[in-house]
Image (cartoon, rainbow, N blue to C red; front, side):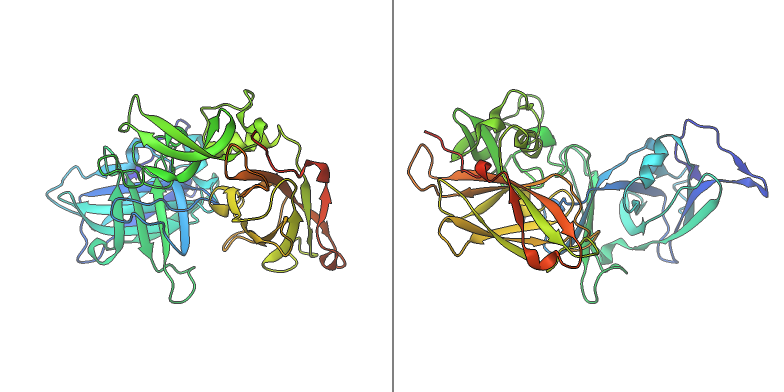
Length: 407
């Protein structure tokens, strides 16, 4: 048995002197799975983020997917002291307290396990929703499945320390599989470019072939303030830079010195939203504080632009941090856009006030420096009572609805 490191004193259960409070992860193989090494991938669930692309799977994942950033401890890489005698069972003890507490702050807690024999992956398993208690012992039996029979990819620039597994899970709808990935913190696509310097944080950039290295994610150019297409310049590591080819006019607040230009684009935009005047849209909810209809639809009029070829710039990928999805299409009037709001496919369907925003790019009414412009609005939960649903949206601060203009 091995123990995950902890800085606190471990208390003993009075009724059993050799049992300690916390979680016991008991990894079991069958007659065909005997191992001499285990790798534990503890994950911190990232709601609203898709699974990244990877060298063997360069196209975005479709369907159910769950992304975890790895919470690593050196004890998570276990090697048998007797490699010549592989075993079929191993217990990993995770005590409460210290840095281990962050393992169960995620919703849900998660660990993926890969078993090896003579450096060959032979088994894989996972445990979802385990808990750590400071007053009880919790044991979890984790049954290994044959690795070769599963759809698994392990990758990573420098070392293959990221993993994703496509599998039919008990919580998946009948006949459907889901994809779970555990990736690096601050480098979610594991391509060696940190999230802060990565044009496409969920698209693996192969610098040698240039596959996935530019054009798919927006960037911010400052003269004038604009959205552009980003491209990586240089291999991962010291000295790597980005280029940003400006295409779409952006409001000046996005380039304000009060917003850190070294931050990822979504964080820069979130900061910028507080720097500019914009309308606030309030969505009526039912008595359960959920959307009145799915999808919930509304039109929004803009100024200084037509809703021609609209595209969502933020939230990135059209998905808000809380998992709600926003789509856009031209509205019935030329100067209005039609929006549809969907709850998370899985997760809390309650529409909370999470300071969500929508930034849309459209064609401008009059030509300017760029062929595209943007407009911004916030979305919030409105009244939630039985009579609220038929009332439709309410809009505050309509004077801030003009599209950005770059002269």
